[in-house]
Image 1 (tube, one colour):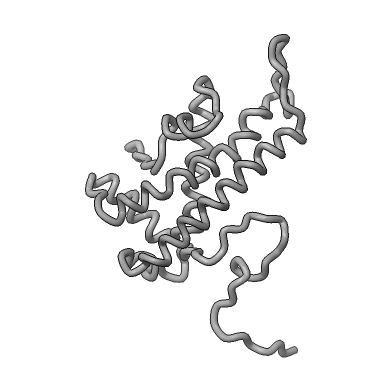
Image 2 (tube, helix red, strand yellow; image 1 turned 60 degrees about the vertical axis):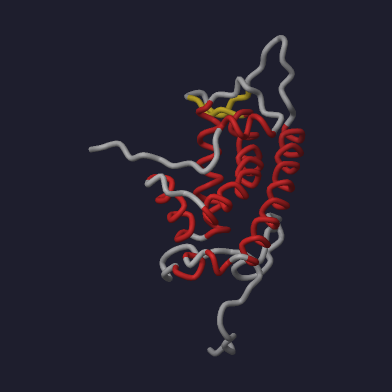
Length: 185
């Protein structure tokens, strides 16, 4: 079976250049976090059709114009989302002995509260970048036919809420699709 080529819209180098992440952090942790930021978080914003179109254009080396601008505008959202995720991935390891935390005589490991606070910091920055991205996409949505092209079985774009909080906002990010129907027994 042939290996599948993966197209990531951002790079380890970009993330390391714009955040406080160590240059020595293993690519194993950061690549996984980038992949999850793109395939889960960004897919919820752009929708499957637009994200898949971006990756197809990267594969064909035809990424230009509005699509290139969109990828550029996704960079900080992907970076902050990935770093929020990598906080846990780099702090705690699952091994044959269970869940472990590294310790060294010259290294002070962050407490769980400090990890949560750092993760919250980057999540808030990702939310702000998500809002900027959504606002830009709403303004220029006519340039991206993929925003309306998704079939029912694919994830549609979410351009109305950038909040990642623990409060249920109702429905699909607080938006109701279609007319409401009265409840009947």
